[in-house]
Image (cartoon, rainbow, N blue to C red; front, side, top):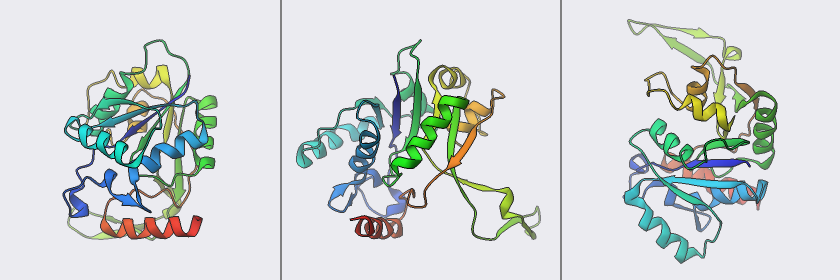
Length: 225
């Protein structure tokens, strides 16, 4: 059985409003609903685990009633950190379950079906896979005293989600104590000494964080419609 854990724990502070960013409308529909729909469009049999802060769950359920949103999912409580939220989502997958689980940012509603497929297919072969993009901007490393130097952008990649893993492997990885070096779910798995395969992501798979991102999101929707 394959799963996806959609983590939506943001408070939306950088959006400048009281409504958490995952609930803001894009094209007349809350972002989080669009994200869930993408994964069911990829595979309707995929089991969706939605991770939300407990304080936001009633509001989310009211939104589902307002918008007539009936996609299937199970709900897990969000934690204080991304690590804790992912761990809470993983706890809803039965021990001993075989298959794959993706972990995806709830505010990335434009992940392509092709990207999702590449991640799950690569994880089937390699046990862990992440989508990446090449860096197009010039990068500069800032030194200890504020001076800097250019670095080769060809040595770096932009990391997206979903990050997809063998269920047994990711459950084992999240038995560790949380560390500051765990910047994403793949870094938790890599701490066990495991290699993570990289596959091509898609440019539209942006993380909606600022008001400007919402403007871009509307443009993406208009372009794809």
